[in-house]
Image 1 (cartoon, rainbow, N blue to C red):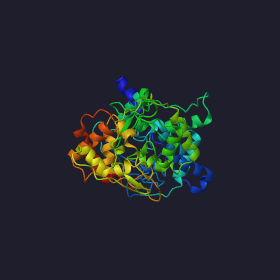
Image 2 (spheres, helix red, strand yellow; image 1 turned 45 degrees about the vertical axis):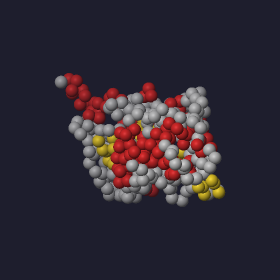
Image 3 (tube, one colour; image 1 turned 90 degrees about the vertical axis):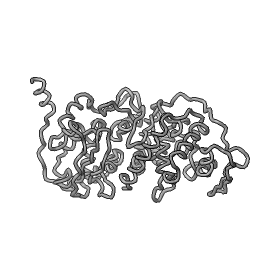
Image 4 (cartoon, rainbow, N blue to C red; image 1 turned 45 degrees about the horizontal axis):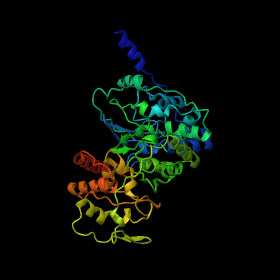
Length: 433
């Protein structure tokens, strides 16, 4: 009974007094501008904006292994948003994962990373959000099973896995490295996707950046765990984070795509600092690329290029089905020797082919690479309707074994079924902002 009472005391948090929504004139322009930049790095508008809804009004469905959580309205509407939240209430949510009413927040809101944010940056974020347009919008109720739907249970999760503390700069490192680490491990919460989680949904700290999963996509390992066959350099990371693609590594897709769209508008120095820190995580031990000779070099098979246009010769009869599909559908872009963004990435060195799972390759094949409005960037049609499961399996097998020279993936049929389910869900749930 005593232990239960102690746990209840630990779990219970009081409400903080509501305030009248502050005037926008009470915040300085500089503070609002800095908060806007920080909100981009924190991906706030992506998670708090539902498809076809007003920005920051919440309602985005976020599927988790435990159920679906809906993001909340963070506009200054006094009844459905955070208009009656004081700076102290906002700071408590960011640092402790407790809302103004005293309810524990689900860690889909990454307060385990946001707790590193400095007082000044929290205040700037508050200023930015409180100067947005107020939108009346109620978030749908979360769809979670018992007992996870009881928020007091989250106090136990926090007791086990949430250990907040201030960011401490590493004195042996330069200012850019420390800035990058502060952003990557704090507001940008990169580890939330790129770190594996335990059965209770907490990041495994001893395996930071060793790879994770988000919305049916593999978040590839970073640093020494990376499967990339061409090591990421600081320049490549910087271009990828800013432009959304890199010639040696391909395009940002799935949940990473809105991240780079936000970083494209964030301060260039901050994105450069993030690349500087991420590059310092190290490279994997370099392995010689044991690639099979590519048929693209055979006479008559390499696509004929005339600058913007390429054409592949008709594949000869009798080729394996996977190679025949590749020759007909993929070769013109991926074997023409024309680099991104107007050509196709060299699939032999693609992380999607060297990864431990075919998940991302299948997602790309089934969902394609949509164009970005007003920007030159990689594009690719989706083949979800053109290739049945047998054709998809043959193509993936050819890419993995013959083109990349790697052992076949086990369980490919199950992976194809899962990727088709993800593609069907994606067409409904991930409309453009």
